[in-house]
Length: 273
Image (cartoon, rainbow, N blue to C red):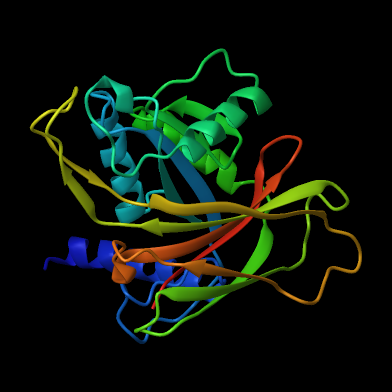
């Protein structure tokens, strides 16, 4: 490995370790031991509304994978959520990762942000900025802008065992709270990386499609207005893992979303061990 490549890898490792130390993301599956932690990174949630039935979506899926792998924005850790809508299923190929829940979430963004229409691939950065998911430059600028907004620390703990298909999630909120007194929704997602599908019908027939951050489970855990003092007891939730999910590729993501504006004001993620 030449010096330039090694320096790039070393900087990336340090940045990932910073994110882990901040409690935003646990990255033990990627990192060698012995890296020192420095200043924390800001988590940015990047949602991609996509479908295997849409021929315009694979480039956007590739960009999301690239963002997760390369983490191209300084002082930010990008957390991908790939949400496969179900309204393309009627056109010849049923996306195995699709759900009406994700179509409903996309419609909710359309209402909250007063969008003129919905489409795929549609990317939503931190609940604030909507853009075409295949527009890499615009997406990166939106991520940079999102990283400049203050975030509420979210502390996340996942308890499970290697033989269990059940995980117990405990989540709590720290200071500062940017939107104190306003209604904030607490969302919990379980995502899976490294998914591959050979599509046998529809617009992407005979293509092998790859995805990361595929949302397997999504729920709104609670809606609350954080007052002073903050609640001391963590919010807990138990999630049943489907037998089809590869637990070695799973991640738990928790994020706080302003009910009025849809802006994501805090987030954390960790792998499932």
